[in-house]
Length: 93
Image 1 (cartoon, rainbow, N blue to C red):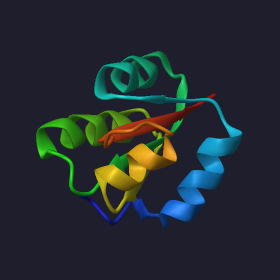
Image 2 (image 1 turned 120 degrees about the horizontal axis):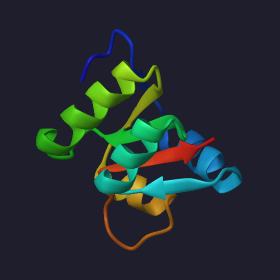
Image 3 (image 1 turned 30 degrees about the vertical axis):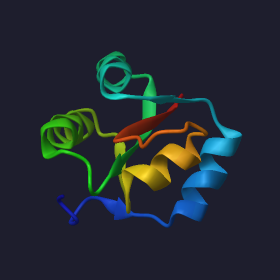
Image 4 (image 1 turned 60 degrees about the horizontal axis):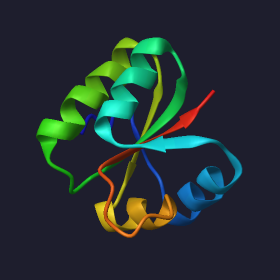
């Protein structure tokens, strides 16, 4: 995690953002949205596998997309209203 350019956000704030915006969950969907310029903010879980988060973080940097870290996959999954943990989610433009 490159905290120089990234933000660590409380899950309550993430909940508010995701409740009021269209979003996607999952690595494949995020990669596509980042490459197509459709993502404006990406959330990654701090405890997710770096093999998932590092490529997404690099795509965020390449595409000048805001990257926000959350404490855990369980927290991010709950914020996305899914019953399992989520390593990544993104708010769409």
